[in-house]
Image (cartoon, rainbow, N blue to C red; front, side):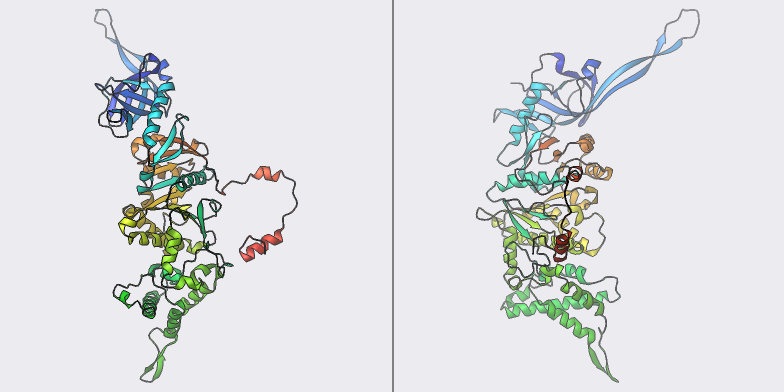
Length: 579
């Protein structure tokens, strides 16, 4: 049974006159037929000799060109020269990109769509426009192919809103994904919609890096929050302390050491030696001398930072015996600025989640407790974790987010493959901590951690979903590893160019619509989707706190002055709750 039956000429577009792999040119015979063509519309070409295979293409360009051709006129045989003349003729052309083929599957007794092309159409083959019942029939095939046991329902196709749009949930996360769009295009809605669908699975495992508290009221997610300056002493299970001993040597250096100083090298060496010494002392005090054989500087072992500072002070003031009496030690005076910077960090309550964490976070078993908080899953726990980083100072935000990602990745790496459960990071506002241009050591630490995950994470069940309104500012190494692109409206030329580089040339025409798409409308391209196309994303039931304030409407309200004294007190206390 043929998938399409074209009984009249109302669906005929023209005949193929040029074939170039996925690019095909159609010669349209009349202006009437040319008016059937719309950019972005689907067309089909039956494969010659196979009634059960239909090639599917998308119209890229519609051209009506006037061509001037030479015309030689006959003259009497009296020796006169021939007269050269020209005539104009109209050539109607439609350029299409082949998207795949719908083939009859004899095993399941139905048509299936595949993006692979085993054959290309022959010259002079007839091309038909897909519309009305034929379009609905093809979109039904697409929906049936996508609606499997591992499918994720996103919304409806813009081509035919009666057809539901699905992506392959396995391939979406296996190959990483990038969710891009300008402010107000519907990114947060799309993220919330994906999270909502994921929450319905028995043991989904997603970690959302929430920088502005947009997802803090999602009822199906476990809410974690980096404590603010006034919450250091609060005993609350939703607070996530990240003690300083979790930082590796490079992250510690980025917080304390100024590389521009002449004594920076000595500072690094001595700090590393002091930390190693204190970690060894902790293992010995806890009866874990067996770990000393495999112990390294970056092993996540608790240690006393106060004792490290004590050693630095001692070396900074050390006097040694010389031939003429006491003299300055080898490091005397070299650590003065380092000690001032360390004291400044430790006394700043904004960094309390690092340096003033409760005692239970500084025990030998504390790391497994933190891992359980970040990675716990199953019916008895909320499998989706939202981590609110809004209280983290901007200068160390990349290090802290990179630290959380690194802890999860390393625990996942060392978990037995049989018991390993995949986990996905949803990196909201990724351009803020995964910048393309690495300006300082703090940013480099985070970028390096995520680049490692982007390159190797899929082997250990760690996936990335990069969410950003400025893709041109995100690390190109990380974006290039994202084989699934969900792009909402993008108006900036640099951002459009970045997305264009991520896609094969054959799909570039799809991106022409990026600046004119509606809110909540996305261009979905990649390994996880059968038919690269525009999809209207379903709004989530529980909406994120990202609604834009209606300025003009609010200004029309007749209200009295706000209580600025309370706002000032909140600012001083770094807390919005009433005292």
